[in-house]
Image (cartoon, rainbow, N blue to C red; front, side, top):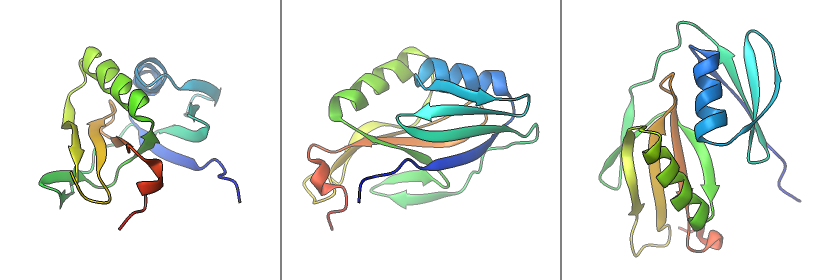
Length: 139
């Protein structure tokens, strides 16, 4: 079975800020839109920013490898080169990292590069990369 695109809809308090962040910083092409939502191409997956003027960030976190990981969050598994380029782009855009780019689970089966940051509406995103993608589900 080949991998099929996923679809994720999430709240944002400002569509123009979402366009600048997802389109400008993350480089997601914009698809269909209305006055209340915008589709983005999230590397072949469809994410949809839905306007909710009252949208707020969730503040719950769980401890993972010495860091407080925000819940909920979403993101992508990138190649190491793409992950490094994104970290540079996010830093250059002046976006604060909730968890700085680093390698977690060092020397363990699930070793991965990871970083967390939030969009302008407070939605938490995680981007990660593995030296070997075959280790994605390693236990």
